[in-house]
Length: 270
Ligand code: HPA
Image (tube, rainbow, N blue to C red; front, top):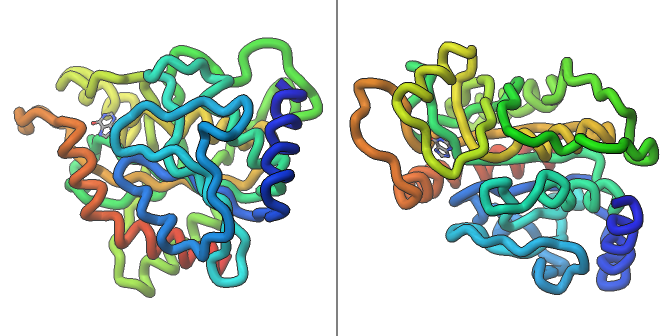
């Protein structure tokens, strides 16, 4: 894995000398954020050695390098999900690559189903913690100490300082934000009503199929991480309407301008 990561990093550095401080992973329907980047270089995943290729509709597949204000950023336009058939090492491979390209702060966005009654479709949730209920762990297997320690402290996976700054920015921009706990399940089915209920009973506010593995791996390498979720559907018993991928994308698209502004300002100001 170490050699593969270094090989990929060397390839990318042979294409661009750009050294980003911020890494951004864009979730379903939130890929338009790259329009906020003064782009210097775009690299399709299909050109990058060892990179998987995204298969989900609504996710593009490219690394975008550029600046926001005076900050250097790289963004993943499209991420890899466990449910696509990748193993957790593949899902999190790009985060390892980001680290060795110089990224110190990782910002992750996603779409999720809300189970907190204070949320509605379109709500923006700053992730303050997560519950990992995915069936495979990205750090399973022999640990390579060059990446990080065997046993990773997960008492503060989401940077409190970044959350506080994001709240300050949201207030200044009159954007309503919540903070909440994200529970990660493998998907690809959306939850049954009983499962949404379980998510709520377990103490989470929203549920989705991504983010948790990437954040674990980022913390393994001591990257500062920030996660943001857009509620694209509400999972509760009164809601007998079915949720579809099209609805998820549509709801995410509606919240996207706010999400973009929040992330943009966070990068500029943090
Ligand atoms: N469940 C899981 N993942 C999701 C959901 C959901 O309701 N909405 C968007 N991603």
